[in-house]
Amino acid sequence: MTSRPAEAAPDAHGPAAPDAHGPAAPDAQGPAAPDVTVPAAPPNPRRAELLAAAAELFARRGYHGTSIGDVGRAVGLTGPALYRHFRGKEAVLAEMLLDISERLLAEGARRAADPDPSRALDALLRWHIAFALDNPALITVHERELDNVPEEQRHRVRRLQRAYVEEWVGVLRRRTPALADDRTRAAVHACFGLLNSTPRSAAGLDRAAMADLLHAMARSALDGAGPAPGRA
Image 1: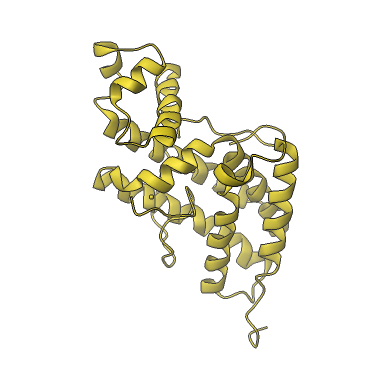
Image 2: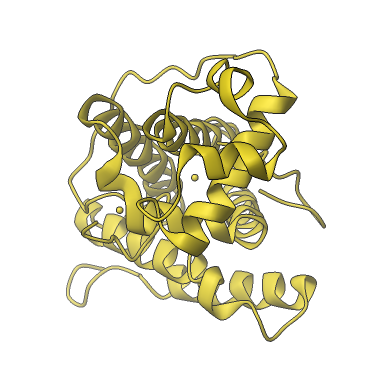
C-alpha cells in the first residue's frame, strides 16, 4: 500500500510472520495477472478517520494490544456509533490493508501506462516514496499484522500486491528488455525493501531530503540490476 511535495498521496485509510518488505511486496512469487478491479467507494470521512486512527494504534501497540473500543475512543466514538462503521477490529484491519493495496495498484497502473518507460519508472518511484514517507504506520501494520486478516481478504490483498509488483516489472522490462523476468522481479522486491524502510530510516532527515535520498538510492539500485553476467 501517499504523498505531499511532488505527488498526491493516498488517504491513510487504504505480514505474524513478518514480511520485511511491507505493503507492496508480497511473497516473491512468479508473475500473476489477476483480474483485479478497484472499487470506487464513496468517500466516508468518519470511516477514513477510524482507519487512520487504527493504523497508528496497531503500529504502536500491535493488533492484539488494541481493542475496537480503543479505536473508537481515539476519534470520539463508542458503542452503536462505532459499530455502524465496523463490526470489529478484524474488519478494520482487513479494510485498512485492502484499501491501501487497491490505491497503490490503481495509481501504480496509471503511472506505469506512460509510454516512456524511464518516465514511468520515475513516476512509480515518486509515488511509492511519497506513500512510504506519509504512511509509516500502514507499512508497520502490514509487516506485522497481515496474517491476522481473514483468509479471503488476505488472499485478495496478496493478489492486489502481486499485480502492483507486475506493473513495476513491466516498466523495467520495457526499459531494459534484456533483463530476465526473475531478475527483474527480484530487483523490484529489493527496491520495495528499501522504500518501505521509512518506519526505521526516515527519522534523521526532513521529508524532502529523505525523499531525494530514497529516490537516488532506489533509482541507482534498479539501474544496477542490469542483465546477469553472460546474458547481455
